[in-house]
Length: 213
Image (cartoon, rainbow, N blue to C red; front, side, top):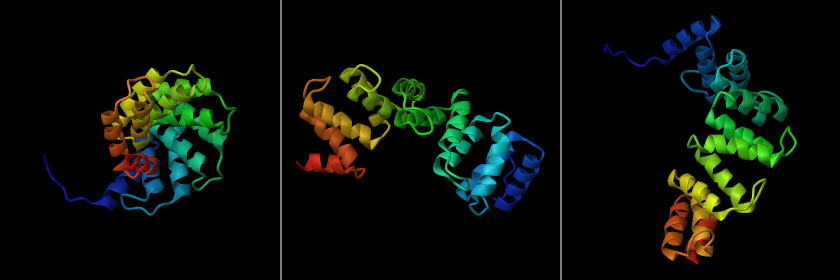
């Protein structure tokens, strides 16, 4: 393999030439760079939206997901949850786990759409089954609280554990709490200590309090 020195300006030049010819992956990469202000460009949300939209309109799932984020957060455009939901859905239907997670969140919170726990559970599950830790935690929370599903501590425990093992502090805390209360599992203070400590070490305030107690 031939090794070349890193040259961000040269890389950007070729991204742009490809993007200007309509290549969706290059358009996405250019939009992503502008969104984050990386790889030799200053952060520019208007440029980001422009290139992400061009890519998203060609069906590129990553661009659709990030364009959804742009509208959900109002980055260089008026905040528009309906527009965000549209792009999340297009990406989610192609199997993007982050888009599935955010689409679930949109329906759980009722942002731009009527609140719909069944729809939220559907998209969280799809993302969770792909290993998305945030979706695993939120799905666990739905079963823990009985939101749109029958309350089921064993199912909650399953999803919290999967998320906690990936390092999600909220899931670690909730897992510790379930062992403390004996919800879906026998009460086990060693497990309580283990999971509270992992969450506390990440700065989780409630876990730190409970660990101190």
